[in-house]
Image 1 (cartoon, rainbow, N blue to C red):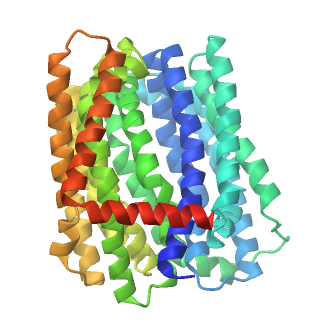
Image 2: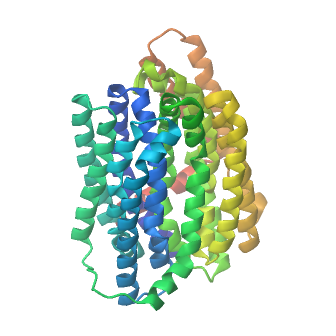
Image 3: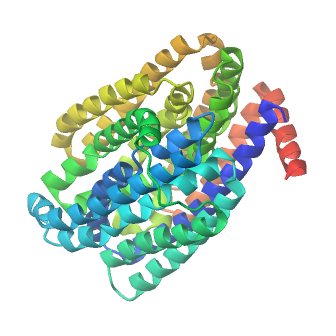
Length: 481
């Protein structure tokens, strides 16, 4: 199978893994936002910052290491499993021990019991690392799609029932833990490999030597990327974090559909051609051509329809989330156009370079967020968006030094989609001005239809060949599936 067809088929099932889960998660989120108060969302968001960090530590970067290596032995798998399990147990105990002091630091006594329950998360992550790595290495995205969708559906159902019962923040905790536990059970059912009671220092060191850079990179991304929530929580409390986290969640729903569906496929695919820089360059140009068609209108459109979307989707009580949603849309625009840059650098066997870039980005975001927090939620959102836009340029420059490709042609792929998105946004904003005071649902529905028609019309005028290419790819994928 050609690289192009392999990439497309892999992306299709990767979309299934992401889209099935994200459709369910998005629906559950919209429902929970109507049932749970902002302070509860903020409390869960603060706990999840810590949760993401400890789960990353429990992974130790070994999932990526297992995927990236050309060959792996049984000893690699066994050693990775037992190392992860040991780290997961230690992190669970430490989380229980430090839950109280962390809650005191933020002046939120309700945070302590939430963290203690979330201590189960790193343990659940640790028993999944090897199985996930093996499944992704073998491009088994169909199985992973079913697993992710089922776990999201069951966890979401538990969360909704708990929310209707008036359990507040515990509905969010229950949703997360049940989803993860169900995912572990299904993963062990679909991946036949089982660990032996064996551990090899040499084989673990072999994986960890690569995985350490991935681990450090991911930790810095989390700590730098979550500085906004931490600062808002420290200075303003859980309610403000709740408003901000809902804005983040609305933006991330679009991000997950656009980038999350293909992100997991990038490392294994580019790892296979890492020695052929010409093929890598062609792959990057193709990625830019396809992504720009969807990413640019998705986030420009989100910024345009944010007021009606929030009022219809989650209710009037979340109106303070409108402005940060609009600002963060530009963060995700830059992120989704370049989300694969770092993964390609990793796939090319240069994780140290990626670590350096991520370190600089984390420091920059923390610094700008410290400045922006003076203006509350909008100031922090501007800091986050500015950091991502700056480092889109930095990462593009780094990648071009590793893989020579024509920068003008690469950026030129985004020209027509940008013009179409600008025309779309102007039409939607003009329409909303005319129908001010009308039903938010009417504004939302009509705005989406109008924006879509204007954007497609621009593409038909200036990029008909690209639309034809997308249609042909869709037909090919349908026939293949």
